[in-house]
Length: 248
Image 1 (tube, rainbow, N blue to C red):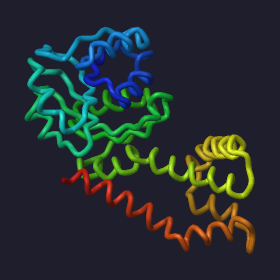
Image 2: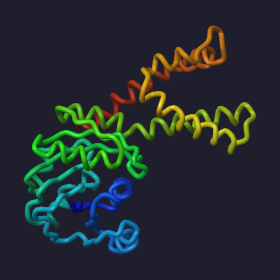
Image 3: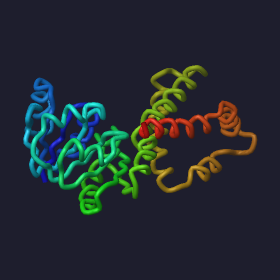
Image 4: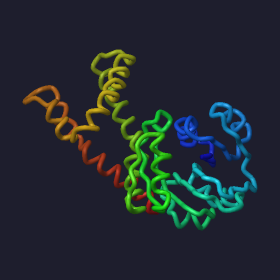
């Protein structure tokens, strides 16, 4: 299968990184200079945006949501399938702008570049298995039953790397504050996050926390400080805030 990626931003690059060894990649974007630079990296063909025929193509739409209307005016024909990663943009809105036989919404994240994306999917059931197969190449995908659920998932899967980056940076800074060298503190947090992945994959978070927290110990003291700072409440509200943006 050949996949046509419309866009050349960070997520387009992350998806191309994860997909180019499995599929033939084509890019369509405005910036010809960038297209010439990136196409050899992914052994991809490219076309500069402008009256492009997308008839029967399998499109991964990787543009800013507010660019959908202008992009659609430079496409002609009807695609076979569109996989849109546009946050907060409904299937109805996509279909009103770009003709296609099948339309899927997907919400991957930048870890796709390393084959570790958590991707939420929803849309037309006829291409459900195909959608899962494509996005499983860049991590693990989860099919959801409604667009509302996908918008909620966007606040976790899509925005999650930013939230976890905040946690990582804060922990690094905490180590430096107490006397660790910056490089040592950074490396400890990097190893910590790598080791946490298999833990969370096989255990409930509460069980992991309880297994580490000894009575009156260091972890209990640090955890209490997090609760005093309403960290849990802040993360819950962050998911809520991000979800609300998708509903505007």
